[in-house]
Image (cartoon, rainbow, N blue to C red; front, side):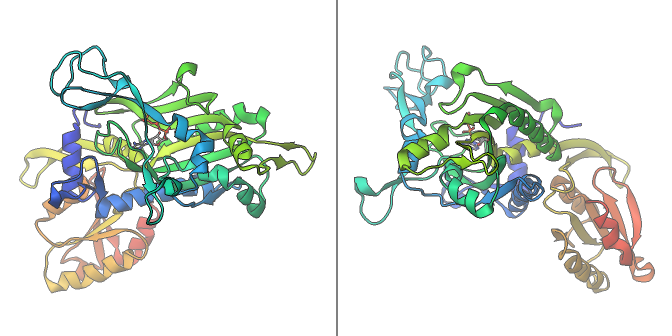
Length: 441
Ligand code: ATP
């Protein structure tokens, strides 16, 4: 049972103490809303990205990948509409100068920070793109933007991808990478930050095939949600009402998740029509149409876009995996056991090797064993403190299997394997251990 009372404080503290996520720049007093993925966090994040790539690119013959530059020609953002419309409404308190997103607060209420009434300015459009200068001169001609989404590079590179990959519509292009948004109100840990990672797909279809493709991608997204072990009772589809659709979208379904701070967007699935290809064709003067090799028909494909945040996936996985159980201690008492029940295939550490004592006889078996298994999986080797404490540490980071090397191992050439979820222990021959574990993932 997932713990109903899980708070963000608990989660943030666990992530810090176990090396999943740290506050950024901490020795300098931190940097608001910046977070660093620690030794285990980087593994979990990579596991998420690799699994997504496998599921949506490697295993599908109608998908290819891309890894484009983060800083693109600024004309891209002009054509895509981001310069004109990628804005949030900003209000500021005239007294304390605190800033808010106008659509997130009651504009008739007093300022939440200083309590002054009638102090908020009229909403003004605030562009979320980070502006910078390319090269040594800070002048208008060298203005550039950090990309606010990965999607546009896929549209801009579309003719190159189409010709070099020799794919025919319907097919899709996937990309994983950083995106930057100067959010007015970042917060809630890694839910809303100013730099984050996206996993995006632009799936190109014949214009009349968009509805079927949309339904299919919605199904695929839910398969992914299940694969990540997200608590199905916390996942909802929201059909975005027409008046709230982004400028490029004719239909959007947000997949929402019940985070400890409320129900919020986890992923978006949008029907972008041919808006982007058409805009880039007009702005660049290049023909971006697809020619059907059978009929010779030329047309601009329409696009279905599943857009996923890596960091929000990570957070929803933490919330879903966090479990507190009553466990029996060696002296017969019970105490709470915190277990991160990540899907085994995604857990940051797959196997922990724990020699029962620090004596050479045991470590001389355990360490080479850890090195051998590390060629296949992420392995932790831990010989400090009591075995109970070590099990607890591994439970808190969600390690599916702990392998204990004890003095009997020296005689029977076997080790004890403990299962994270059932806590059952099984004696396994050393010679069969790799095969035994391989069958589990
Ligand atoms: P929100 O309404 O929460 O601001 P959005 O609708 O602007 O999100 P999209 O533009 O659809 O988000 O971006 C696609 C995905 O990228 C989101 O579903 C989310 O997973 C992720 N994402 C967007 N903005 C952020 C952010 N500031 N921090 C972390 N992840 C983000």
